[in-house]
Length: 160
Image (tube, rainbow, N blue to C red; front, side, top):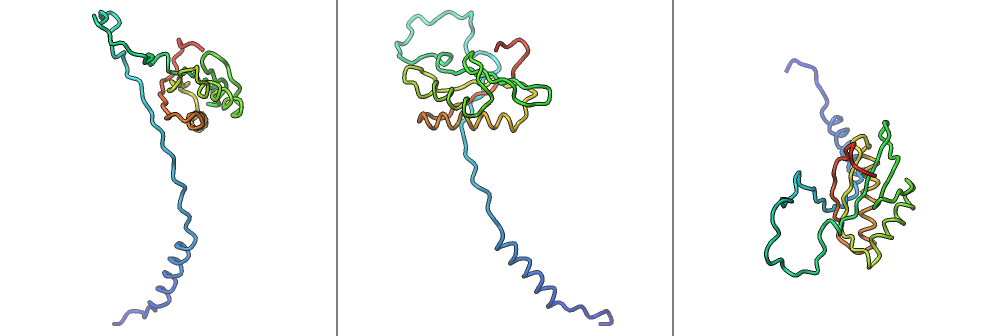
């Protein structure tokens, strides 16, 4: 061999030192929680003009519209959350106030809410939305209910 003599042993030492450093300093990311999301269909499942069934089954089950807590989230032009409307009541953007309002709805045995429809302003930042989702998930867990969240885009003609 006529080429330069390259010492391989020091290179292997350095590679193993780097490997040891990364193995010893690695911290695994915390496991993310999961929640169930039910998205609304684009159109109603039943036609409003259709005739009612001749023999409706007797049931104590409330319709989904009465069990769904309506929530509207509005944002300013910069994407910051400016208004939270829970069941036609304006709630402060303060997380403690939102948690108190959600506890009032989900922990009351006379209130049948077991799912939530969140209408979101399209300008709202994702981080702001995730804060609200965390608040709802925590409220469902405190009420010992399965988190059921549905989302819809807020349009200009929506109330709130």
